[in-house]
Length: 127
Image 1: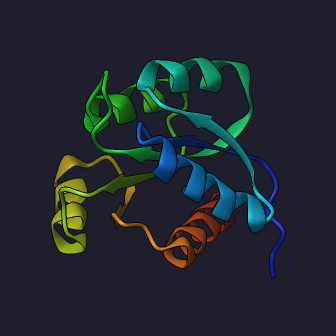
Image 2: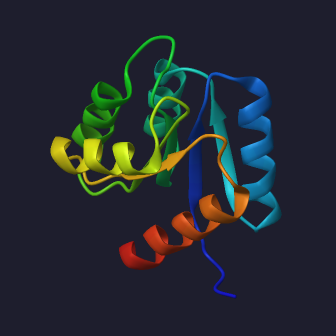
């Protein structure tokens, strides 16, 4: 198993989902910051050395595409995993490809194994 360094930022407004995903990431050895809104997440991004963002597409204060734009304004090469319960894998992949955002997509409910594999792949490719 490859040991990955760096902090992840998990942005999810549903506290139960956020806690479950954060626990899965921490169990795999990741350091995780948690936010329930885009505003909280942006403050954490400013103050911490984040290597990857996992974010819900629908946040109470900002939609996922605008949020990804704000992240990339701060760090153009920041890897992002977008999660959503509103899009299938195929639709989410097509949506992100058409948007040109370069993020990866995972449908909810997110399988911890799929999240961990995607995190590892993105962090390894960014190294």
